[in-house]
Length: 151
Image (cartoon, rainbow, N blue to C red; front, side, top):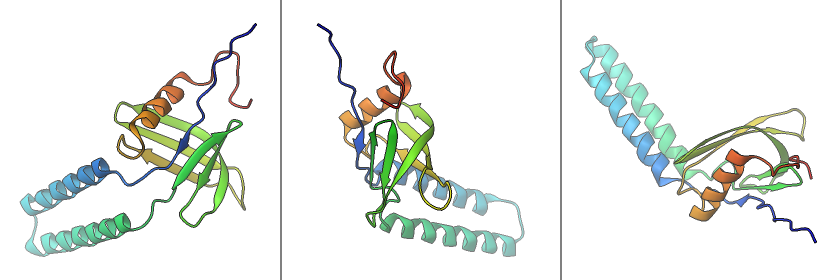
C-alpha cells in the first residue's frame, strides 16, 4: 500500500491590489515632494511637475484597465496564462521571487510567433489568502522529492 499526497495545482484569478495602489500612490507623492523641494530653476520645476502629472494620469488610467493576466493555472508542469480578451497561452515559469507579502512570477510564453516575457506581481490581496499561502509554499519548496515539474 503506497500513500501519495496530492500536489496542489495553482489556479489563480488575480484581481487589482489595494496594497500595490497605496504603495504606488505613496511613491508618486514622494516624487512630487522631491521635485518641489529640489534646488533647480523654476522652469525646470514646472517641466518636472508636468512630467509627474503626465505619469500620474497614465498610471491612474492603467488602474481602470483590466489586468494583463486574469487567470493563471498550472497543468502538467506548464503554466497557462489567460488575458482579459480570453486568449490563453502556454508559458514556462522562468523565475519566481517569493517574499512574505509579495510574489513575482516571470514567465516565458511557449506559443506564438516568438517567445514573450510576462511578469505577474501578486500581493496578498490579489488572490484569496489560502491560495496566496499555498502558492508561496509551492514556489519555495519546489516539486515534491523524486518528481520533476513535468509529471
